[in-house]
Length: 160
Ligand SMILES: [Cu+2]
Image 1 (cartoon, helix red, strand yellow):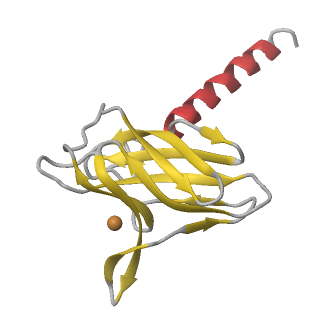
Image 2 (image 1 turned 90 degrees about the vertical axis):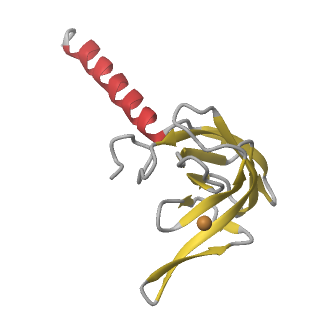
């Protein structure tokens, strides 16, 4: 029994660190927790980029994301991808409500943050961050992990 316990502890710690690496940094400000924040690398000359993240509202009141700013681009807007007659189209969203106790996941093919007028193409290894502006919960700045061009998720092995 004395030998089993330390082994189990070490195994648990390894699993936790593997999970947090795949999910990216977790940033908590007040009742808002942001995880899995990532941007996709862009080809040379690209003027727009895209970022995704998950917002968890651990508070007892709804919060509303109003917009975001990112150091790598002139502006960032909330977009939603909707399929119309078999064609995926993006629409701007003025604000995004996250209900109390709920979480909202942005992902390819759905909600995302469009990075407009990039100052330079986004490359893997870039040190990027994004600041989320909430109507009733202040600002939250999170680092953005950069995934390869075409990646479907923050994990470098998930791209196609
Ligand atoms: Cu978009």
